[in-house]
Amino acid sequence: MSTIAAIATARGEGGIAIVRVSGDQAEPILRQAFRPAGRKKLASFESHRLYFGHLLDGKGRVLDEVMAVLMRAPKSYTREDVAEIHCHGGGAAAEQALRRVLELGAVPAGPGEFTRRAFENGRIDLSEAEAVMGVISAGSAAALRASVRELEGGVSRFIGGCRQALTELLSLIEASNDFPEEIDEPAAARKVASEARSIAERLLAHTDEKAARIVREGLSVVLAGRPNVGKSSLMNALTGSDRAIVTDVPGTTRDVLTESVSFDGIRVDLSDTAGQREASDQVEMIGVARARAAQKNADVVLIVLDASEELTEEDRALLRDRDERCLVVLNKDDLADREISGVQADVRVSARTGEGIGQLAALIRQRAGAAALGEGMLTQARHIACARDAAQALKRAVQGIEDGAPLDMASVDLWEARRLLGEITGEDATEAVIDAVFQNFCVGK
Ligand SMILES: Nc1nc2c(ncn2[C@@H]2O[C@H](COP(=O)(O)OP(=O)(O)OP(=O)(O)O)[C@@H](O)[C@H]2O)c(=O)[nH]1
Ligand SMILES: [Mg+2]
Image 1 (cartoon, rainbow, N blue to C red):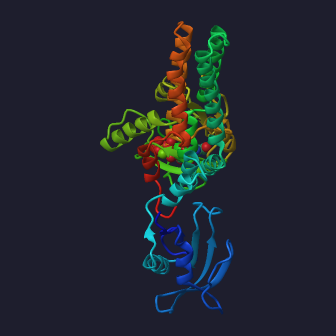
Image 2 (cartoon, protein in one colour):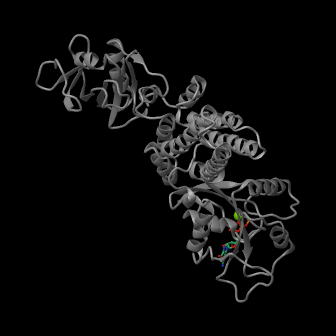
Image 3 (cartoon, protein in one colour):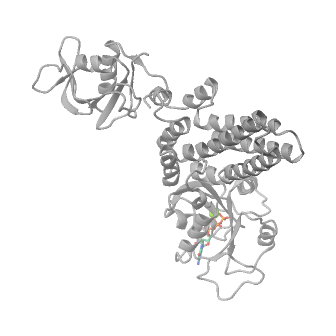
């Protein structure tokens, strides 16, 4: 196995950068490249001890002031010997340190190659390797929480438990084939069917595509309503900015304007849109079309009404078409001196005074429903797809048994379900699946 090296920290200016080296040659390379301060080069490094000293070129000249550490196998990220050189940040210093270790025999690491070695050396399973990438790319506190839970083995434990249960069912089927006189086949068939059904249900209960997407990518919320009801004012109130232009001229907003905010760690993409009405000028017409398209694709639609005026035909049209994604928001509550008839609002607010804005934010947060994403919930699309297919295979097995097919017919589907679960954790993943997973990684991880 080659010894690989890469810059593990992000490009750009920073206090320090880390060059990571993994493989048999990590220690000899470090011995050549690094000299501890006030001493000769070390013959041997104490494992997991951070040394202060200098990075040297081939002639023994100082290239940079650095810290270095050797982590001997198996107590390292990859389970191989790993050396890290903490040099100064910024492109040049990190590139120089990398060049030096390549000169001494390391080869450049491919994307995700350190993590791939950790996987291949059995330190982490495939779902945990993917969690590493999830942690790095997390764009919100909720996404980070979910990935850390996966990194700690949340998915592995849940899937491992299901897989173990399937293995037991498969041995029961085998035993009933091999020792028909000792095992009561109808009773065994009942047990296999009921347990396969319960595993399928457990798998499906742990897949919620929408919640998973919201945790990873955020919740999209669109402000919709007729002109001048205060959509842009509400946008500004919710984001605490004055990005959106507010005037008393109906038809002020033309384009869709999106801002991201964090509500309780969940990323929320709020979009202000043009007021919806029969427009005559061309720019406004395009704006209205864009508003409708944004509304169609949103997770949550805020239908904004003006509490100080009677409902118009445009308001009524929006209310008529509302669906379960919609929240009815009565704005300008500070001006309202009476109830407007015929509307049941979810919340009354005033973008001007700020009243009710907290309550509106809480309602939006509730819609994210991410609290449901507890331990073992699957949040990666690849895992969800495998778990769904496994549940499907289990349901086929149950159906077969209920239709009176011989019990060992069910084992085909049970094996398939077991294989699909193994694809999540990597025990049963093909090289192509594994390659595809690591292709998404960055170099240095
Ligand atoms: N009193 C009061 N006035 C408000 C409130 N919200 C908005 N307004 C005023 O209503 C007018 C229209 O506000 P905008 O936020 O531009 O309304 P809009 O829905 O974005 O309008 P379009 O972009 O034209 O569709 C402005 O004069 C705001 O100052 C509120 O809660 N109370
Ligand atoms: Mg506006």
